[in-house]
Length: 153
Image (cartoon, rainbow, N blue to C red; front, side, top):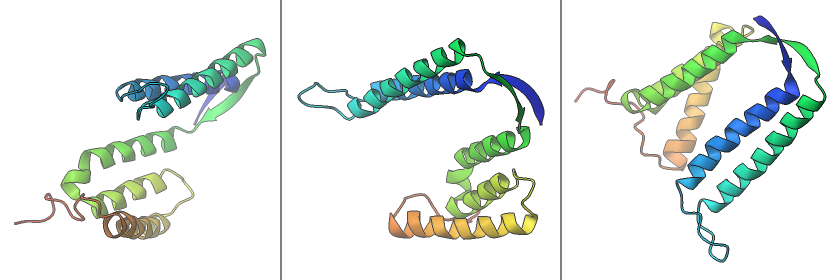
């Protein structure tokens, strides 16, 4: 872990602003509609604007009252979670739902030093089966259970 001096209120404000901009951009890809007939992008855009206002208010408050504190940045969990999400996004079509979920959940579980190989394996197995039941059986998702990289024709 790395020790960094930060103003948490300013940091939160910047994160809110970044998310607001990203969601507003995404909402603008949809039809906003008119005030009498709201389109599918109206509500997400309105929520993004509220988040932007909250972010600006938080940023201003943090700049007015500099409350700098030292925090430890947990690099291992950050890197493991980001890599797990990238892995999921890049392999779900090739490996299929079950193997991709199992490996993604396993990597995310191993981000916490307190997890053992056994606990991460058990968590991965249970969550993979649960997700299969919800998404494949319950919702009928079209993603293959085992993808073409694993199933030979």
